[in-house]
Image (cartoon, rainbow, N blue to C red):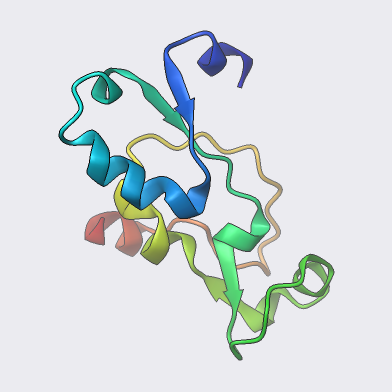
Length: 102
């Protein structure tokens, strides 16, 4: 983050990423900036049963969750830097099939 912050950048909330990218297509100044979005766990997965995300529940019951990053955010990401902890029981954030679709 320290290195990226030294470059021209905008920080965009994950839920605003799609609209930011769409608006950037017509703004040459934005296309020269790095877009930084920080994806907390709640942006990466969702409960299979449709209930609200709960971080503690997710860590205790990862099999009850599925990937949401690929569908909701990956189409708007060109470069991904990750430093997240991963447990093999958790859904993968990015899969080969997801990359092919994006």
